[in-house]
Length: 254
Image (cartoon, rainbow, N blue to C red; front, side, top):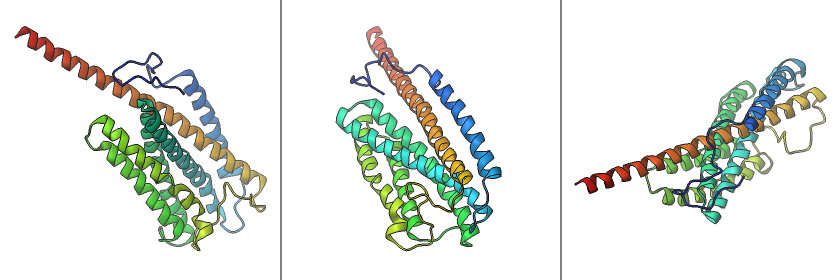
């Protein structure tokens, strides 16, 4: 994706005119197929786990949401770095859009993780390493969004927020490796680790189908949220230009 290097006041000839496109419709179709496969294999075809029983099926939601959140936060960091380098508004909007989606996915991750914890541990929450670092990560990105919501000069805000986005992303490997670095209740890593030989083929298929679907959902949401943010910014610029022109006209008339 490329952006014009012009200032926000200059229109971009390649700017989106709406939130949908042929690409997003194709992406939406792929998501529907992925959801169908994930539901059928995850809920009906894959066998229960030898230790966790039927509760293993929560993993087909838990893993995709956390990996989609990680992807969103990484995109936020990349967009933040690119904005600090290029000073292009589009990168700042991508960073902000990805952060919003990442917070949504990660909140779902913590909620379904709490439900899973209630079944396996008997409580919704324990201040063990993985859960504690996850809570810190979520709060950091909520803070990022709060800073963006504070009324300020757009350029000042767009300079402060990327710094937070770059600092917050450092916590992702800490969260991911917490189960290896510290002793806790949380099970070991399931994805991006050695494949568990005890998982059946249908379990693995359901896992990776759900994971791919979660990432596709993130991509679909990112495209739409970015386009909404871009069009909102353009509408605000047009409204400001109209107000300035109106005031100038009033001054001439007087």
